[in-house]
Length: 571
Image (cartoon, rainbow, N blue to C red; front, side, top):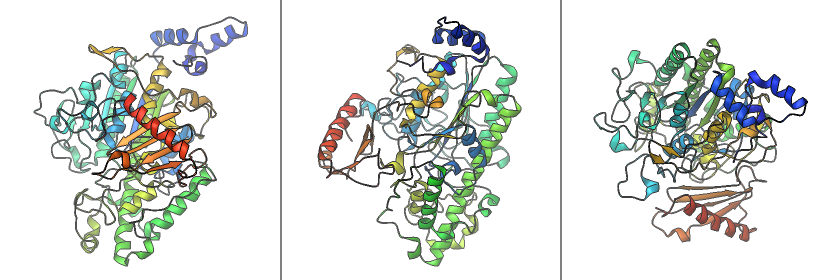
């Protein structure tokens, strides 16, 4: 049930603000839900909605979250809106995307892990979004919005990504998007998008040209996003726009024009240990983490910077310079989109959510990868010899794991893990017409599946009971609209469970329990850890021995939530 009284400010259309105020002054009563619903039926300035999703970008990788990387466009969005420091995702690509677009737990909609077909497996492991979990695009299209997605999709099973596959049920067009330009799988080459699932799709078929003009993919998808928006603004001005902009950046391969890399040569020679400390200090200065937060310890298998050879230091610093350039280049593309909105006179009435899908990527291990994102690669000596190729179309690289730890400052671990480094991500919300607390920081516990219910709340749209003849499951997310206006608004939820590749976690009222599973062992024997996150922001102090009853309570709650949301059996 929505708190419509609290949300009055947002539900009132600007054209009736004067009359509403006058009526209230003379003591009359008015129904805010009815008034807003009537106004959006007769007026044409419902907000445009834009989801901007970054890929494998850690909590500390953007300027507003303590990074040294230059992100002026994202900085402006943060300064003109609000940012959250307790926003959590699902630690990996497809599950986060499924939760974001449906407003439901990823397990409940069939996306326990990556979008891979699992015929005959349990419902939560299908590898595609259950038709009973309609997307925000389907709902908004039915309510008069034009819907477009550009960039990474990663919600189509691997067995359905061939252009020759007859059904488009699990392609963007089958999930409510009228326009699509991007790729279906988890990553693509930024200069040469090719290979099944990684080639560019235009609508429902392969694009005529894989990479017209040879431009960087991030540039190409923003070009197309602007084209879609311009077409709508000019040809259907009565229709608001919903755009889902899903960058490949900064997922491997880290590729970017050389000029962006050059900016950071000399910056990272200080090493990952020093850089992490500097980000931690900057986060406190910015107020994005509490002053009593503790910097967690590093991975026991990761070397300190001083233990590396001079060759390793030279090569690894260049990897991070390339990653930083990749982020800055992405920021520039976001800036182009924002400038277009301003030139079109649409920016002030556009609600933008900017976020990342999970923590920074550790998959390349201590050595990093140069010629392929995953698997064994060339030696560090060969990397040095080919260093000028790094970041170009002649490489397909991913940086060393300790840089991912820097991206997750101040938390432990990274992508795939249930600790903060895997699930805590940036979230910036900008809506100039309605958010007055410019540059504000929000500390409420927010989950990625809360974004879509928030949009529906703002628009006073009820989630439908049925889509295309399929009965719909209830939304699991909660609106965070109250936090736009009120920094002290209560958390939208008190409990959230997590499960990924056997690892488990649960948050409940300021406490978090985590279980790390060793493959081949019984789940009942998994060791659990306990953190009092209300007092320990970065999950640095393990307290299970001090509070055994609290740990027992959370373990029992995990099983209850997993059963409730269809996450069993464990696999």
